[in-house]
Every structure is written in C-alpha cells, then in structure tokens.
Length: 297
Image (cartoon, rainbow, N blue to C red; front, side):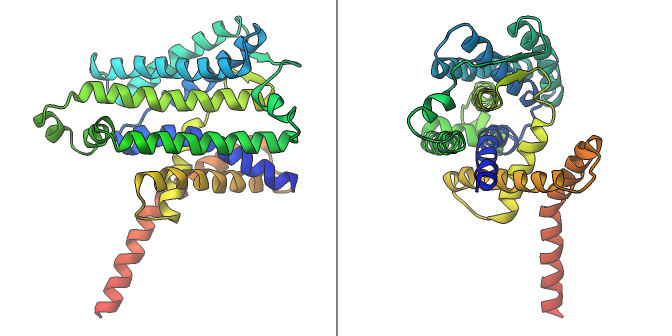
C-alpha cells in the first residue's frame, strides 16, 4: 500500500512540473530547456530559506517566484535579444547552475536536516508522511489545473493560446506576441520551480544537479497523456497530464526493479522510453491510415 501511495505521490509531484513543460511545449510551441535550471532553483531557494528560518509555506512561495524570474530572463533573451528558443534555455540553465550553488552557500547540495517542511506540518495534523505528500501533491495539482483553466478562459489566456497557434495572425490582431511569450515562460518556469521546491522538501535536501532529465520527465508525461486520452478541453488535458506523470513514474519504478540492473544504464532506459513515447503519436497515425486502407479495399 505504501509503495502504491509513494508512486502516486511521486507522479502527482512530477505532474506539476509536466504542466509547466506543457505550457511552453504545446501552448507556446517552444522547446524550453530552462526547466533543467528552474527545477533545482526552486529546490535551492526553498531549502536555503527554510534553513534561514523562513516559514516553509513562505519559502515555497519564494521558490515559485524565483522560477518566474528565471522564466522572465529566458523570455527576455528569446523575445528582446532574438536568441533562438532552444539556445535561450541552454544559456539560462547554464547561468542558473552557478546561481543555484551561490543560493545554497557555495555548496553543490544542502540538507534540510530536522527543519520543518510543508509535508511535516501536514503530517503533524495526524497524517502519515506518505499521506501528507499525497494529499498536498493532489491539492497542488488540482489548484494549478483550476487556476490555469480559469486563466485560459480569460482574454489573456485566449491571447496566450493564439500566440502559440498562429503568431502572424496574432500580430495582425494587435497582440503583443513578445509579452505573451514572456508571460508563458514565467508561468511555466514558476510551476517547475514550485515542483522542485516540493521535491526538495520531500527528499530532505537540494542538489544542484537535481534538474538533470527534468525535461525528459515532463515531455514523457505530456505525450503519454495525449496518447492515452484524446480530444480534451484545456482543463481535462491539464488533469490528464497528472495521469501521464503517474504512468511514467510507475514505468520508471518497474525499470528499477529489474534484477541486477546496472544503475549506470538507468538514463539509457529513460532515453529509450522517451523515444518510444515520442514515437507513439506517429505510430497511432500510421496504424489509423493502414486501417482506413484495409477498409477501403
């Protein structure tokens, strides 16, 4: 039971980050590598702030804001300096590596020790540790989905979506495309940093390399959700990403259970899994076309 609850909790935590990746990858149609720097940024901020005596909830909010600032930087580099999106993310995450180390006091990792966290505070109300992580992760996912769904129905949200769908048409209708891209970058990386802060509190430490592979997890969760469930509203799609993240997490946990697995091969399995997940939509199209041809014959 604890294993199942742990898997669900981990998947729900990852889903917050995956939604952030979805905003840039699908809504804005941008491949943003900033995620790999924003994730440890959130972890570094929350751990350093809690160690300094800040309330864990306030520290988590500061981590969210720090991620939004990182998104602002990436957005400015991309829109104002006209640096290609992929290179923009690489530039930002490279800079964040040093910034994250400085935030943690010039050390590559920082432990929370016995300091209070949002999960410990919930557990003090009578929940188990696993129950606290699951409850807060689910609450965060539902809150993020609700806020983003409401946002996407406003004028700003509609303009944000149109910016990713058709930039020339958006510009023709008087939309400030650069501003909308920056807003998208900020929301995306804010959520990713929030996820990093929650993971750091759950694990009990922050590490400057914790963001490695973040984009792989996010993309995998998004694609799995799209393959499993089609034709959803924006709210339904955001919730489905939570399912995608849980499925991805369960697959990874099963890989770890392989007998005599060389841990050095785990990242290779992750890469192969991502390749298969990315190929899944194309495979579906090919099978559908083949099915139509057989019917016509």
